[in-house]
Length: 297
Length: 320
Image (tube, rainbow over all chains, first blue to last red; front, side):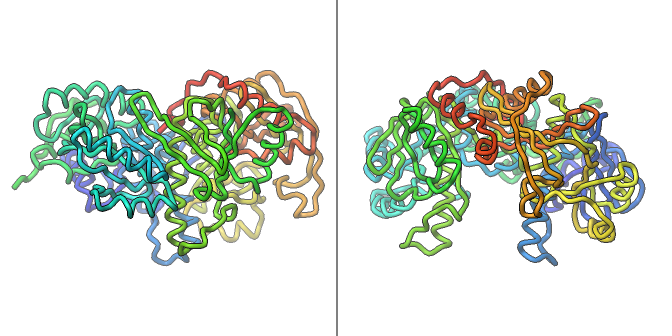
């Protein structure tokens, strides 16, 4: 059985499920393998890891491949907040161990570093991007208003208006206009801020295995990033990764890394290619040919 | 110059600073208990990495001058709350500030004790046990399950069984007794972790770079960390490890990209060595005070020397 850990409102889950089922491969979509009535066990002993999953409280099934789109969300309904937080941590931890030891394709089989820091801002990815030779926006982290405004002045002198202020703990960013610097300075009294060089219109791309799938046609300069993007996926240990490249002062650079790609970020015409490639990773022993046509408007 | 980022009220950080003073090694304390008050950061990331400086109440330290960094982030209890912010806002901004510092410390080119990524495996005990087993350690037979029948079968197979949390949330290791067996039906709400009880003597190993300090712990408690609370005595003494075990300890620390680690071992009466856990932020003070082992001295020498052991981090320690 193929398992898709995720939710039915995720088009990536439903698209891959449809493709696997069209090939006659039994597939199950569930949020976690621990959800009742499933019975699940993970054992580690002298002979390594063995696992057992019995969906619906029925017989155990062999797992042939897993697409991971959820990190084990536990419905808080019926839990006291403190108990829910504890159980969420337990499920999260159990799921990481289970996925790590499965002897079948798992997309993505995340490292602990990524499993527990999956919403990393670009700042956290900078060392790895640098190792992969991928340009990134010039970035400053400071609680010094003078250093911040110097950065803004330097960009201004280079013909780039403003700077992008990015929250590091939530997905939020805004362009600092000249009138915003005093408010930014007030914020800096309490925390350093992360400022980055503004970028042009981004183009998203998916790395699926060794394949780089762009949204639309990449420019030559964007396409030149592909070796670095493949290396990024390998170094991060990820088979499925979304990035955004955008024009910077010195050419295109990476402005976003997302280990949980969203099909909604791509044109519908690209969806089938992504889903086919993704499905191909889960059935590596079969020569995969597209079996399902997406209904495009 | 050595950078110490931690809270002066934190005993481990305090000992590291005291040892640096004793050795005459220059250092700067970036007080995370007060940060950002009185402390600051101005760093620019370029194509070659971060450049800039950190500053404290009466000092400024260029990142390029740091020979080694010792980092111990603090929980909320170790922080001085800002008087001029509502608590929720203060918490949000503190998380923001910590994330910025974590990014910086992870990207410093000098030895960092410890970079965050290497310690993440500690958040999942079975995952870490799997890594330990792959690294050549003997680990206790372990079951994680949401199935009461599987837990009962495991106990029937192994006899004496203990249970503990699956995640990194600290829990007291307890024996699975009749009372707990009666509550196994609750497993249907979520998984728990069980391990075959391994009899023997505990040994705590601290690695510091390529140095190793082994401490034998004698206690009748199942979990000696809580022995005194339960009125059970604890005795400690330095000990030697078999070469293969010592080698495995250094190996796993390197693999996890941990320049400093606390490794929990147990030697059975038959002479087998089991590994339970690797702690990426070990409170070594307890052991050093009981045995006189120069753990903090080795630590400050490492930070002063600025020479990290060659590491080739495995995938789970990828620096992201």
